[in-house]
Image (cartoon, rainbow, N blue to C red; front, side, top):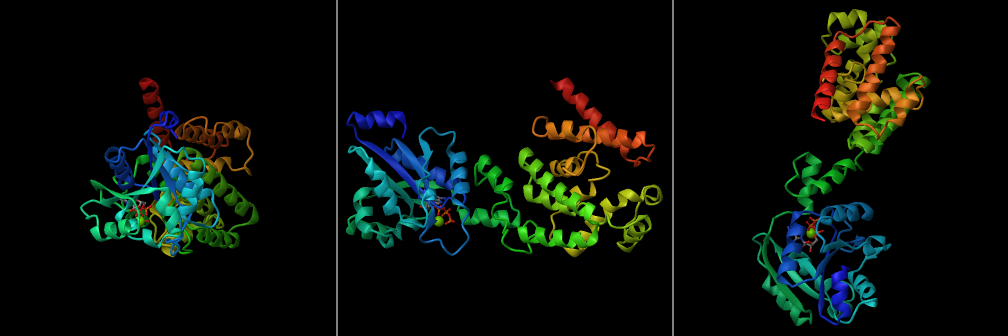
Length: 418
Ligand code: ATP
Ligand code: MG
């Protein structure tokens, strides 16, 4: 409760707290618009968002865990002092009944405090079927809001009032958004930036929510990862296999720290050396069989980098559903490239710094994880690698000078800006 609200209640003044209940899977601009309209029209002192635990009416689909839905709510209301999020329902085991929540809230309630339960028309039409009508009727009043141009159903209002519920309406035009639509869009890769606050979108992306990860065909699912891990064990020797496990782990950790997609990083990590089991002759043949045209300089003089280029082509044939950026990160893990994406850098760094690697500067570089920017860390590793190859008089890939100059220019530019 806000301090001002508490003071008001203590002084015996009437205080109204709005409760915005819902699954919030995820919270979106429709919910926020409804809450803002309620604040203004119902003369509320504050609004408490109350993400449901396991809701009685939504047991037909897999609901995101309560902690994550709670966090998304917190992120969404963070900049509005009158809005808060209540953790009560997500902490409670078993099916959530609003009546239990109201009872719990009322236990320490100041007599001059009134709870107004804000609900969309769709929820309001089910209110008469909720558990423990007596408690629902006496411990709160209700306010009904509709999505966009939908009408508040007068029938529902009549029925509720006839049953003894105190019901107000909120006249507003909230955006026609639903969590269902957001989940659908995420699943098919459509934009949601106009439907949820950026902080919420960030959580959705970072945790790979709504991507259908319980489907083993989904390349970002645990099942797909485990299956490819088992395949890899048959394709490379034990040492290389352990290295790949280390890269997958390290890439996931780097992605978490630097805000890249953790599951994509993990997948690119486990797959990056998919073709490392071939010898020089074998990998050239592999490139031929895959119908690839390779720069003759690379084909003849640098067969050791070919595995990075053949693997994504081979994987795409076997599993066309693997995302393009995962394939790109695999492709760039050896030679790198100009303009590397975050995921590319994550995998490149992980390849060098996974726990199985031991070289003199490895620990010093590991200590920089999360301390310096991703690009800085990447260039550190890149520099080390190039120097190392030069010291050992190894041939460099023809793109190396271009890549080197590209990042040096970027460093200089940044120095100038600061
Ligand atoms: P889902 O599509 O999963 O049912 P939802 O968008 O309806 O999600 P809920 O968490 O079910 O969101 O909704 C919480 C409350 O907010 C409900 O009372 C619902 O009617 C209301 N609500 C949801 N979206 C809007 C909106 N765009 N405008 C007004 N009220 C809304
Ligand atoms: Mg709903």
